[in-house]
Length: 457
Image (tube, rainbow, N blue to C red; front, side, top):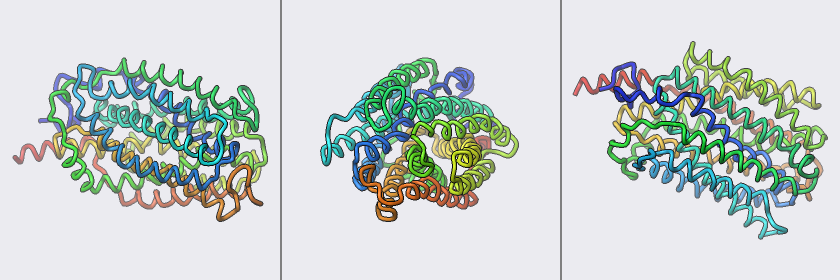
């Protein structure tokens, strides 16, 4: 029986939190973030604005993938939970998933000379494969957080460190990418810079992910647990109110972020009227402020808890998009970007901690470690972000006449002003309202409740 101060999966003597230093686990976020942020940040620029693929085709592909992902995400997580090997449950999937994601990303950014339906099919196949392997990596990497670091204080440190590594990755994969693809390795309206950049990022990502995976040590006690059953486990998850409350609320943040990542370069090109390379400045200020604010938010988490801090961060993020809408020049956009970075840091510092609390509660109630399935189920909400951003992009055709870089319509600037500012503002406002009605017990509270239930038996 776990003591009230321990997490539900703590095993006396195993001390999983002491087996892996937080920094060693956290560095994996750098490798995982590089590919997916490059994809999200540059895919619209390459396929829609440069190659001329219709935004409606882009939206259709994202919608189809949302359906596919709703099926494969839980299955991937369940397979991870059921894995029993001398290397652990999560590590084999991380070792396999890294090169698969790297290969699909390179293919995605290296389309042959295609147009029309052929271009859409190439995009669909490799966009879906990239998202699939990203799901595999994230489900297994995220499942390690609550297992390796049972207390919320130590978990918060590990999460803050991994988010810091994510920000470093974003400086490269988002802020530096426009310079690489359109200047150093390519040209403003050419495509040759994209495959070169993808290859460099692939090598970097695989190296870091493998180094992290070989360095973490999973809790050996989980190897002896009963293997969860898929149908009953999914049924229990779907009947969990916290799953729906936290999942839908987090999806508001995730969808807003997906829109920002895909639209910032086009916001700079069409609304601010500047070369795409200037996105480096806007993305850079957001990331630098986020890096500076991350550990300030962590201090707030320690003082008032992850849940209350999460609610405050939603409000700051929503306000930032309002300011960005009012910006009409690069200096004004940079000022708004600083506020955006602050709000974003708050969400990075808290969102995963709130999700981890749901995993704590599930483990305490059902005596099973099925973090992979649970996180993959949460990932279904996250993967709907692509469908939401796709629909938002498709709406620009109906509202402003923007269908592609070849058919931009009369107001492409206003189109991407709405895309980057109004849609995320609405989503974050909805998230802030919903977060007020979400209540999730801390790891210590879940452990105490489990101890009380065990005593009652």
